[in-house]
Image (cartoon, rainbow, N blue to C red; front, side, top):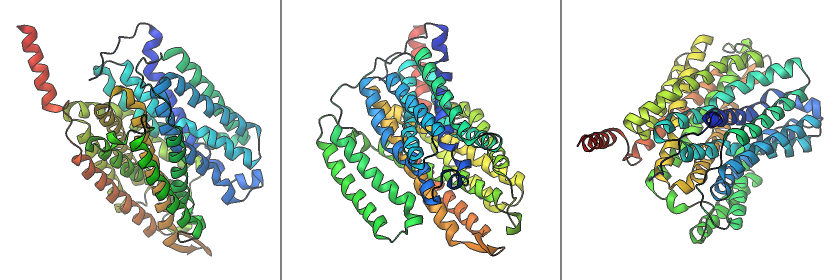
Length: 484
């Protein structure tokens, strides 16, 4: 049972939620700002397109590895301290990118910035420790929605900077924002007293890092290296062996990096499966929409939009996530987070249904993307609440870190799947191969089916004892006792 949270004692403590939300938005902005640069980076750095793609891959890999590791470190050594370190590493990585055009430095710097992926699970854990229950639901929902808000803001912001300023200026901006994030957390967020002491699991950390790097490297590079190539098959084989040994080691460790006994609980394990499926379904929307609207008009379906215009098309989705985060909290309070998650996944599937019906008119594309964004808000807001209800207070950061990791894996698999589908369904446009409209529709259909699987998984999660009628009955009993 959660300990009663202290009431904020000063005006600056009332800024805890906005400051943490700013950190979450900043993390998502950091992940997306490099996207507008990718077509020009080979010319700017003298590197091949395949090498340049590692600026995205390195961030994905480091974020996947560091999120559960930093979550566990937060539970042990202090969540505020580790949160500031994560934002600080992001700022340092941005400074290195701003100072160099060497692709090796840029890739290493982007890997360093991947530490910011731990910001959201650490912040959600802080909210559990610091806020009273009546404020916690809205705050966690807002924190979860920052992923979509930041992604929607990051693309047009970066596109405008790249179009009208030197490309290094973009990284100076993110470095400055990172410094603001660190100083804001230091000023407005107090250190949580809830800790899970013990010795840090170094073998578990190395095992998880090795297994995840092999797995995600194989997923992210399969399209370029060939899914049947020796390198890809070797990576997948190594991932299976290493993660199996890691699982065995974690079950026997006195203080494991990830408490797999918690993961074996249906309330936790199924939440992680739902996170993976939801991450897949959500990410396909951004990937496919951006490519679809930028496709040349000669394809017969493309709109020929610029990267700035594409960012503006995706921007309403960020505001929708902000507006609907309180709605998600209310549904979770009334019906339980698993119902919210199931409903959100169904809305995502409905959004892809809209995209399949009409992907020619810009306004219908925006409506479909907005519906998917609405469902994502409901689902992403419910996932951390499910974890908070299912794990002890001393393990919330590490457990949410694993949940975010599962979302990341889902997004990586989604990226690979969408790329494979679009490569398989092409047509000649002006003598060049381009994805066909049928390929995009197939990608929408796959994402919609995955969303339905996420909804079914959510309904299999054991009911929340603190939701719906149980909570109302308990409140009524309390009022009777107080009246007596």
